[in-house]
Image: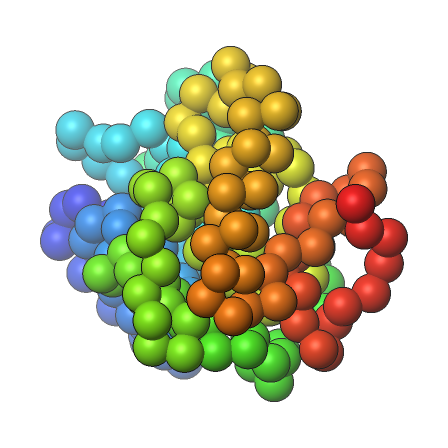
Length: 226
């Protein structure tokens, strides 16, 4: 769960905990993204209040890194923000002030709708490690010299552990103003990232035409390439 207000996150965590859910909290965007990869939660609750970051960008970054349903707690009187959150990948938007039984019911409903995961921790990443907290990546202990955008792209791709990540999710993860980004810019950044991976002995990335990019790993290296 990500939230800037300790009182809000405490109340929500208490309600979900009382309902039998194990809760992990985060108060900053980057720590939430790091924990998303480290903890692999079943769902994510995002509660923003006060001087908040861009909701759409945050939801998109979370959605790009995980298939876990995202439940946003927000002021639903602002219809544009609700629609933007849903378009960015939120599974549901719960109105403020939070009604605890409603929140629990919506979380359970989102979990029932969640499709089975097609990836798992058994996938072989060929020595690749991504530390979301430190924003560092390495291959067999050798640190990769990545730009911030390259790190964001690699974090999203690695989180899918061999599954193909579509171009839309990659653009969302790499750029806040993704609608202004030329698709060729995405390709250029991914080519540079691939070169850095291969230079350190990793098999690199694979590009499935018309779909997106994924890790080239022994457990999932299938499909068309370019």
